[in-house]
Image 1 (spheres, rainbow over the protein chains, first blue to last red):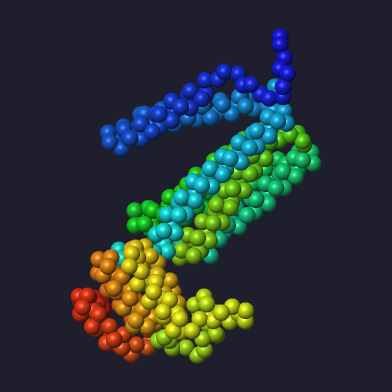
Image 2: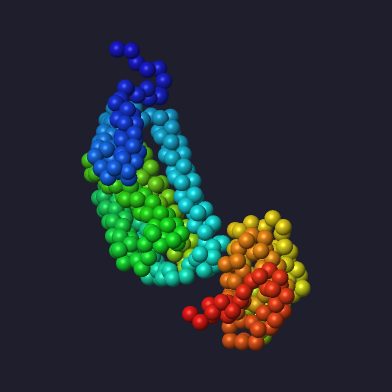
Length: 261
Length: 130
């Protein structure tokens, strides 16, 4: 059998890009069908197909890297660039929602009473649960760094403990935020205040859930000896994503919860 | 400048150019007023700039001079925004706080402009009794 005379990874043909594209089509058209004709069939099929695509695509990447050795240093460098570029695109995604928030809050319209918070809006006290949430995420940033150092130093048990703690803190944040959403005296339908609040914090919450899931996968992989002290890029990518989620929260907290109250 | 306070420099939220740094320029009351009259006099001021300007101005620890309010009301006229014009009157009344003599003085000074632009006061509309 011929061998490759370079260090790069020429991937084998895979069906997952196609299934992912089909899932995207089903999700978009399915949403439109749901809105107009009240049927959830297409969008549900799209969600299932998307989840199956993600599981199988990333499972294949783990097989290619961890078990087949395809993730040489140049390949890993490419994966690093990829993750950085992806996170950068997410930064721009959130930038848009911050733009919307500041556009509306720096120059509140007469319909709102010309003031921010708008007339009639009872804001959340930034020094209650939101402050606790800030502490929880900051603490999880510490624990994920502890986990990284544990992995690098070959401390298996500590790596598992600190990674577990990080994930638990992530769940705690999500739980607290869900409670806040339930108890809030305003809804997404309450003018531009409600819109900017729930869309910005809502997308953030979704990213916390995604980040927690990513870390949970890393925990399972760490338990199954996938990571070495020198090579654990999957974990690093998860940790970068987690720090990004934390930073977005800090901006949300300062802008919307604190200044905006 | 219609201000009721002890000393220009002892307030935490004085206008930017008036903080007591020894190295930066101090803005006089006249310069402050002129700056804001100019801001609202921009011929093509847009709705966002009007609302932003008002929010910034109302954030200061002072009641704006009649000439500033006049300039803002004329900006409302250019933007066809009667709601904001009346709201500005409510805002300056609120900024006067316990000093009940400031608002009638402002309305007295602004009467010609209010008549010219056809702006009713909140009192004339019965909106002050909510």
